[in-house]
Length: 228
Image 1: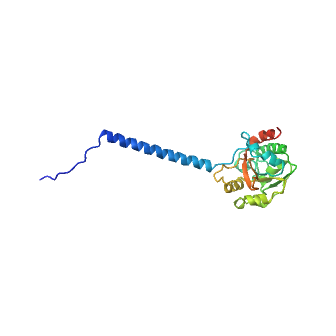
Image 2: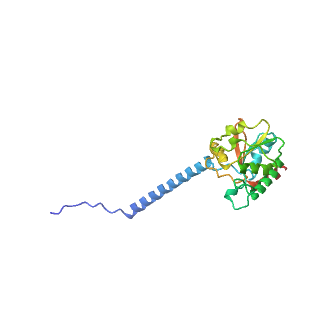
Image 3: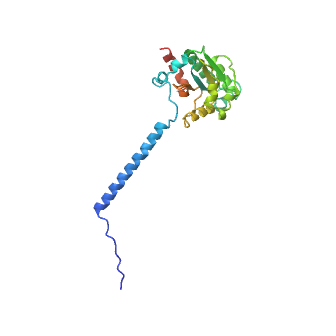
């Protein structure tokens, strides 16, 4: 005698349609949730500081006024490295290129239009930063070892070298700038370009805050706005 096996009835077209619709709804909801998470992460986890040459960012950050009061710190990366370029070297192989020196000189002219009467300048002791600083300001600049030790650099150390009512320009390295940015909420900031700068000033609570970055091609534009 054969054993009787109960076979469940095949799902109807209506049930299949209902299941497919439910699946699409769940899939859409999941996509929305993921999008919101990504958007929230992007909003609260900025990749890089703002570009100061864009729109009125420099004015909105109050940096023109802060500069006049001697309240600004600028971290500048050295010029184009000779050992990583096919361009002609300015001098030793561990220095910058002639092209890099020319770019630094142009940046220096724009920087001088902001006013350097109440500005101190320090550089890392490496050849490339020393050459960059001299190209920027037209004369040799005092060097300090701590500007080369990027792993230990922090914003408190930077601010400790700033005198009251005087701006401070530090010619340093991309690794040092990244170290400061990472500790100030920008762990995934783009690597600084040659001759680019990060601007820092105090907020209303007297805490140092990164206001934004300025790339070499934007310096002239910034200097022109300063004269408006």
